[in-house]
Length: 383
Image 1 (cartoon, rainbow, N blue to C red):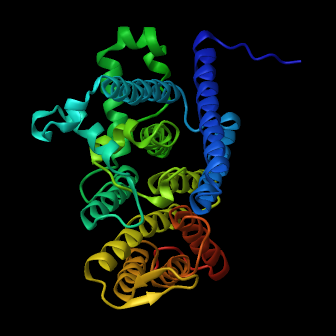
Image 2 (spheres, rainbow, N blue to C red; image 1 turned 180 degrees about the vertical axis):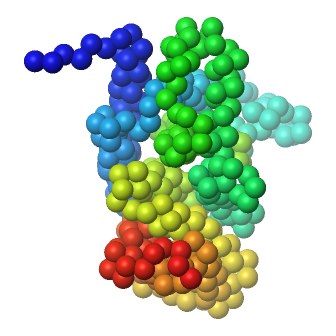
């Protein structure tokens, strides 16, 4: 029998990777618990949370077998998660501690004379943060988070003269670890063992995925606190002054659905199942066409249309969503596949779905474009 002898840093790397797998599994467990307890009062949110848990289980399994990225990125991610848990958990503790110390006088005092944290607690106690319809200003703020989809474009492809941000991040890591070599050697091992060569596609792929996972952890930790502890304990809710929809009660939020769908589909690209352009088109349509449809419908929509299942939307919103989906697809994958992407977007927008379209769009638009590319044989991006 051949035995592989691991050195100290190999063991450290495997320990970090195992820790990441267990963290992902813990989030899966919490999502299953949330979906199970909330599905009676909120079937849409409960089922969507279940689907998110299933997709995240695949991500955890992938990490345990293949690894999402190499060491030391796994170590960096664990440290990042630790920082977020201290930050968000500390905020929740601060809110709880401040809430206990607030008196009747604080609630009767003018808001201008109170610290911001007390004003926040007062507001959260006086009104229900969950609404059937949210104000248009809050709708714009919420949909602006879809702009983070641009980070993938800039991270993986760059922009005109700007090289991929993932490669710039790799360069930054190189500079940092070489300028702090003695400390790096103590914390992470020999600098020479850093696995990503400057300009390598592997480095761009892994660091882009690192960014997706890191953004997911930033969003999900705060959102789990919101669901399990209460909306007032969420730092994300505090920073954005968020007003939440009823569909988010006892369920994780739509931003979690979107990024989990994006992570899952990105792994399909890493595995060679889908082309990077099919993934990019699916992600851009999921991020921006959905946002445009909602905003145009809310701001300019006059002509109402009743969708299959009874949901009310506007013709202006449909036109904005489907037209932008086609335009995004046209630029990225060409006119033929753009039609496929726009059609799938329209189907999920018009027909009733018991699962959030934020989950379905990035996955099925990507898979639909890839399937038709295999059937038709035309290269993606061909005009």
